[in-house]
Length: 169
Image (cartoon, rainbow, N blue to C red; front, side, top):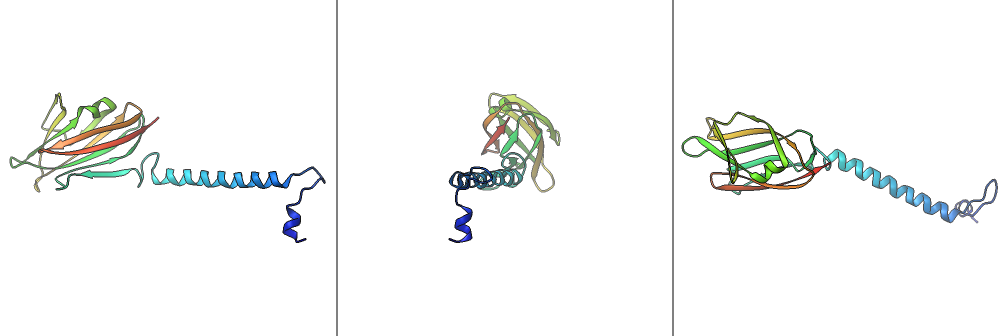
């Protein structure tokens, strides 16, 4: 009998040991450590908040409308959305944010301030002046007010980008 075989034999001194049960417990403990490590790694990568797994950029095929956002949000925690849109020939861009967005999120700040803003049946319409290159970049600080999956869209110059965000408690 080898030392390895001897170490897995049931013992009764100094206490009663069932090595088969002990081996199962060790196996479950290893699985627990693997699960815990996976959760920590997923957290560091942004599955539950900000990080590479959470950061997303949605854009139209022509790239004339781009939305940069976090896929995973925390309820009542502020975060940012960046919208870039190509201006129309008049030198401005109208960005329409779907009304579903306003059901789930509160807009805390908008930078730069829009030249014009109004609420319509389609959502919130914001008009911005373009920069020298003919683009508008708008930064929004938002705060989720509801838990769950939020789906909404952003439109500009006849183009649409669909977005989904998961809001954790």
